[in-house]
Amino acid sequence: MDSNTITEASVADRVKAECQKVFTTTEFLEVIDESDGCGAKLLVTIVSDEAFNKVPLIQRHRKVQKVLKEAGFGMDMIHAITIQAWTVAQWEKKKGC
Image 1: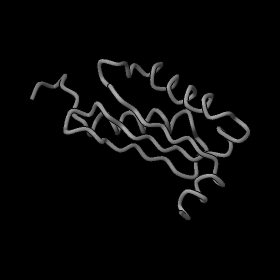
Image 2: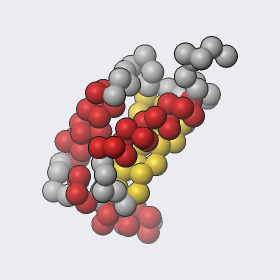
Image 3: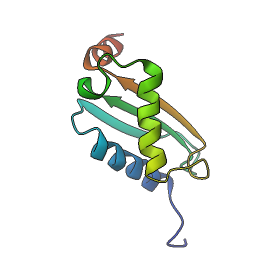
């Protein structure tokens, strides 16, 4: 494999690392590669009261998308992304289901 080739694990790991840099106070942060090996479909879960309390859902998604865009993760690398950006209370409620 060419050293410039990005594996699905490295894409998920790099996305997580970028999110950790920006969303420093998180209760939970996870990035899962849901693709069939190409790393182009990700599920990102970020739980942070500091980042998301009283922030509308669309603005939460835009915050995460901005981080990824500024880090160079474009459509050529990530084709589909599911963003779960929750406060701690929302996350606890989801876990309790």
